[in-house]
Amino acid sequence: MRILPAPETDPKKVSPDAPSVEVAADVTEFYLLVSSDPANAVTPVKLEVVDSTKFTKGQMLWFNLTANRLDGQIGTEKLVLDGNSQVILNPPTNKNDDYNVNISFSKPDDDVLQPLCETKWHHDPEIRNVFFVVTNEGARAPRVMGLRDQREAAER
Image 1 (cartoon, one colour):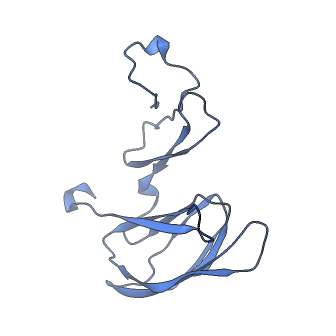
Image 2: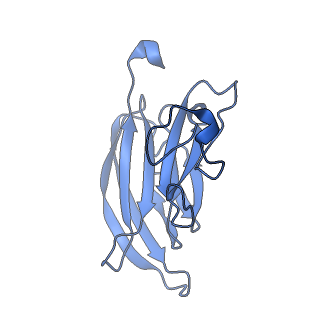
């Protein structure tokens, strides 16, 4: 797959420098992550394929797209997420229920933990969750955004 700045009907005219990614033949389910890459002159993005079968219902897939480190407690699970990394967490509780979330972060040049959020989230053991930690321009702290990968029974 490639991302181009405009449609192109002649494959010979597609720049080899255009952002691209290959999906292995055995990958049947995936997320396509598109993130900023100002260094790419063709289209300023980069692509990453994430095999979504690598984590199961109830688990959480975390992507830290910042240089900050995150530490915290997500229900029964300990979150340790270095800058520009990803991790899969096991279900935060063993039932369909609310659980406590307490996350702190530290900047790359400072080991002092600063609070990010302390709240409750809801766990559904039938759903996979994907979380992104991103830079929140103009704010002192990163931002956590999540999505629920909820599918019909036949699609799981």
